[in-house]
Image 1: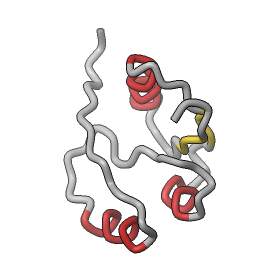
Image 2: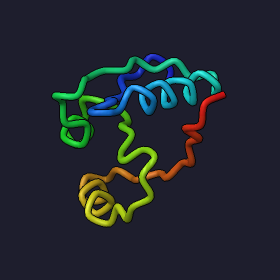
Image 3: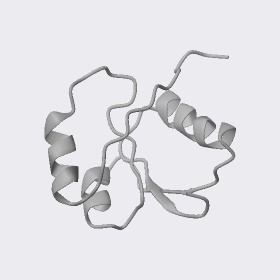
Length: 86
């Protein structure tokens, strides 16, 4: 994902910071695009971005989102993210 666009969408500042730190810790330097006004799922489905984090920090069933992504030959990958302060 180095140099590839990733949509952040609407995220709380602490969540956005944790997402960026997770990519940095993995040695990945994507180009973060979008803001609170952009729809990350729409950008992903339109292939404007290669990835987008969804519902970070909230344990929830993503059945509808997974089905929408699957119809477009995209997959939902669930990753744990620690939002606690260092």
